[in-house]
Image (cartoon, rainbow, N blue to C red; front, side, top):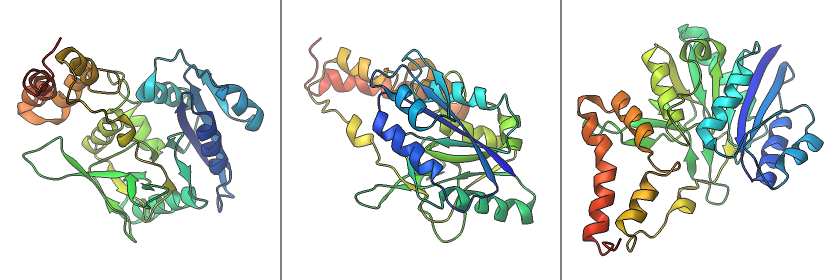
Length: 287
């Protein structure tokens, strides 16, 4: 029997969370798999927790205070899961809807790589936009050496493909990797924790691959976060760039210092300098 801890965090997305869990529990070809689901509900006010208790009573629900965001919520859920003996940990976004054979495919990919090579690997699932079918999240690769923080998304093929790091929407982490890498970094608030985890795993000698094909549907929400900044003041731009869902100063410093090379201070300062300069010189200089 293969024991998998599914790690999820959510906030005020009741229907999406319920649909995510429904797709998870309807996975096919996993007769020898036992799931333990650890869900952090970060203070949702839309009845998410009660709805989950009613529809999925086996899910372990953990409450938050509304200030955890993605990385914080996943850290709490992962910590709870790691208190038990599992063979794998599956990171899953609550807006990711797994295809029926997704989990079987992730396990099959892991086996196909580890058995011949002897090298342990994280397996990232690739998701596609439900409307366009285009790849939305998955494995990431560096595009060139002179832009250490610039990544492109890896398109899945018919075979597993290696990558540098990954989005955290659908990620299968073997217990051997989790024991060495540990939990997500506490310095991060919302984003960057998944990318950082991948890099830390690689530094310890583990591999990362994406599975063949797409494993689920998930809309890329970058468009939802886009704001017309042309007329924002310096103060408004500063608030936006340093917000929990932007690049908080301490979190961004940790990330750039770890992963941007010897010129990391320049990469750290760059978004803040650009935010101020754009506010001053592009028609948004009002305070």
